[in-house]
Amino acid sequence: MKYAHIIGWGKYTPERILTNDEMSTMMDTNDEWIRSRSGIGARRWARKDETLADMATASAVAAIEHAGIVVSEIDMVIVATATAIFPATACIVQDRLGIPNAGAVDLVVACSGFVYSLAMAGDMVKAGSKNCVLVIGVEKLSPMMNLEDRGTAVLFGDGAGAVIVRGSAQPGGILASVLYADGSGGDDLYLNDKRHLVMNGREVYKFATRAMPAAAKEVMSKVGWRSAQVDLLIPHQANIRIIESASKVLGIPMEKVFVNIEKYGNTSAASVPLAICEAVDQGRLRSNDKTILVGFGAGLAWGAVAIVWDVPHPSSKTKQVLNRAAYNGAKVRSRFKRALRQLSDKLSNRSDKK
Picture 1 (tube, rainbow, N blue to C red):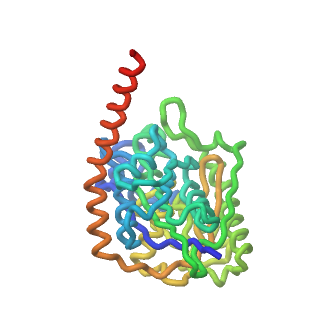
Picture 2 (spheres, helix red, strand yellow; picture 1 turned 90 degrees about the vertical axis):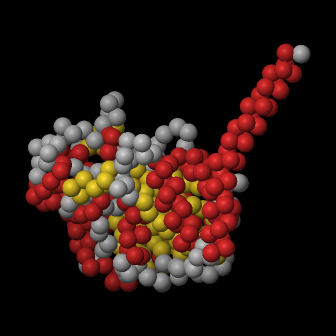
């Protein structure tokens, strides 16, 4: 039997830190109002010239280095984002990293996107259709904030997180998942014609406090875990009150729940992978830990994944050198392929004229 393990992880956050006090200079709000309703103290906003692909690639490079693999081993790239563009960010990342033969797709399920993507990556690996999948959650939500709507504008931030999922004969890794959606609630959280995020906060709160513990309970039941056996719950970082409510319903104490919403706000699809990276860095997520990841949000969509965390894989200096060569050669390779297509088109046109 084949298992799917997370063997590498990495994150990227923009340099600009926008505090609640700075937000109060933009609209009618203050630090106490924001913290008391959400638990948020700051968020990161990307530069205007900083793209989804820039942030996604940076987090992917960090994850690849942690995994100790060569980029050519990756055979699938999945990018979860609510702020999808055309062409797919996954395709741009695949090209920038110099991955020669990999599928690439964007998954647009907003705040649930990373959990959905991770579940799909795990299934691909366990089924044998793919062996090494790069999964990225990335968002640039700041341009979509309506600064006249303090109920939403203060909540969201930008960032990216990535993991490498690889097949192994070693038991553990991604054990089970549950994924759900209810499109009848789609108008509770959406982008309007002005590309501004609109949210019915009351309805989203009610949905989240039901959906998150329900999904966690179901995936725990699938793998036969009781609440007391869970070492760490990593939820989507949307609102501290939602997280605390889920903790109470699940019977998982807050000391076993990872929270970093105070630093980053709601980064949608980037929320869970950012939390994974920080949980590892802080020693909160260790080898063989029984871990539950939960996402919920626009769609409405929600889901959960049960994981036995893997032993970190040491990075190889040789592979790092090979990867740097691949990154450096990616631009040349991309320009060459474009030139080759253009030449082929010219020759084809000449042939047609004859």
